[in-house]
View 1 (tube, rainbow, N blue to C red):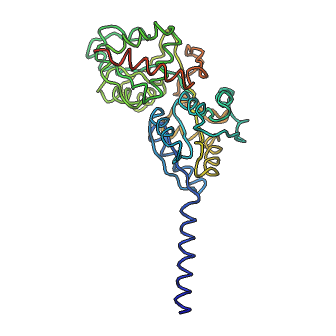
View 2 (tube, rainbow, N blue to C red):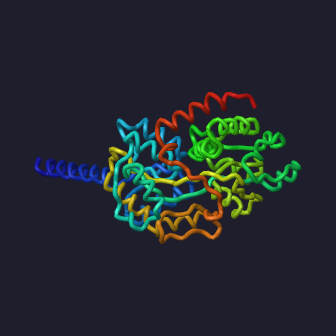
View 3 (cartoon, rainbow, N blue to C red):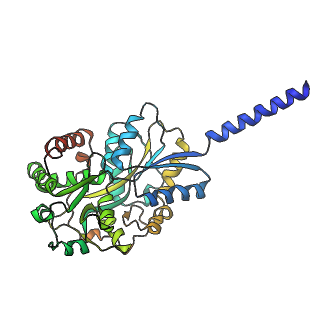
Length: 341
């Protein structure tokens, strides 16, 4: 009997130890950057800390929707990457947690400004300018002129040759919509989006998909962040990158800790690690050509030179707010997406 009790007791200890191990040293990461970068960040953090990472990759619009849907029972711990606007909206709706990282003194001012504008519920991890790229072979094969401005994309000869993401699912596409409104004024900006709609061959779910399709020869012109177009060009595809002549918007890619995170200590460890120069230098291994937020991190010589691009004074606070984002997306749904093509 004593032996049976001892075996049972030992089994209980083993089960308890197993349960403790199962609940500790884990992190659920929601990632909105490119897939290979997301995988590299997850595996590198595991190697650096021994913390197991369960990573899910979705576009920033999709991730925002998921975080909001799960708010009463959060399943994610950290949301890393993707355009800043949905991160700012998540902060405004208290879906993310305020955190002051000890790494802040290593960051560029624009990364800190992103945090301060959101009560420190998000922070900038990289920046990148909006633009487009085109497949030079397809452009020549279709005898199309080389575009250099936003308005060029409205020309009737480009009908069926332009692709962008849906702004409801993609932070890149929402930045495009918000940039046109700020660049041309709201009414003229929506007229631009209507004219562009006539030439669109497909609205994709992911923001980088249009230029990947252009690289493969399945699409001619892709509206994307310029660093995504650079990646295709550097990879050997016949893609030329354009900084539109009128000026353009830009993103501050962001990171947030999800409110009610089950693994809060691990979330803060990832947050601090992801702001380090070493972690941000990992971008170079996967040809991610954004400008990193840590002042000591390396920027690829192939990355777009932000100082030479005509950037608008993008109003992150306004266009990252919940009300404005919802309003613009609703107007796009009603006034643009319903139009015939």
